[in-house]
Length: 334
Image 1 (cartoon, helix red, strand yellow):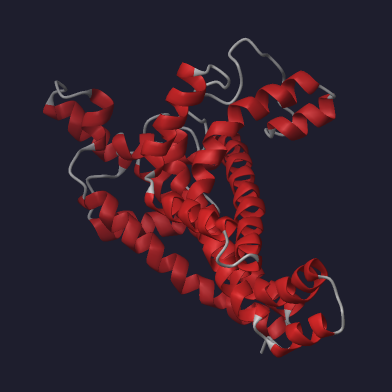
Image 2 (cartoon, rainbow, N blue to C red):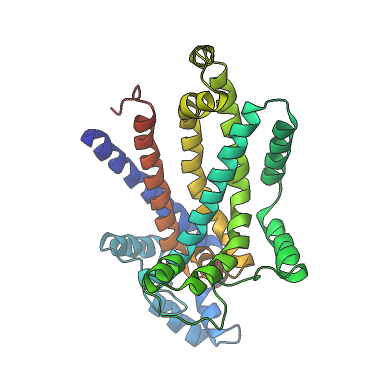
């Protein structure tokens, strides 16, 4: 087990190194000049050159990349070109918002998607099955940005049930303890804070969950149909066990292996999909920050956050491998 963990950790090094190279080169190939973004299009050439020298943009690309890697080895993601603040310092204030949004979306996707997949497989060919398949197909097909705008119009503009943007109402004041609204509400014992945060979270979480929800539902249905045809399931039914006991206790556990894989992969989608969702709903998280940084050619922010997201994705895939062993003892980690 320890050898497996060590090997997987070593495998992440070339992955992260490759990602850093690709992101660094792509960002520097995008048309635009960070110095001009800072000073404006009417800035004189002397000031532009001075800013480029201060930012190190006048150096060759291999020199800039070498300095960037050297900073990474010291745990420094650099400073934002726009604000001149450390990237890690700004990220600490934005990560809780993205984690809350992604966790809520993943919870919705797992509960609704897996539940719909189980029901669809259990009543194969019924109206429940057809409805679940249609909903999953629609969920995969609808673009996130279009769905977000439709939900805003329906629930925020027309019905006025939910707020269209932000994380909390502008008039709601409180001193953050952890940065996580719901955890702070629990620590401060403020029901109004939790309720307000939930109302703001509902629309972006639902928007972000649609694609993974549909994928999980389809994968769960497919895995359940295969397991329900197995001999041991027929034997369990022949012993007189109830349908739901056979489905949940015997079939679902064995059908969970491919579903766990999909859930692990969808974590990466949620983090990348948060860029669009957070921008649409003005959610103050990492995704919206990356989008704004791309527009402003803020290289250190985009490079640093891309590496962090990649590291999270690699870590989640490692946890999925470990979960395999817990779900199926036949799987040996070598």
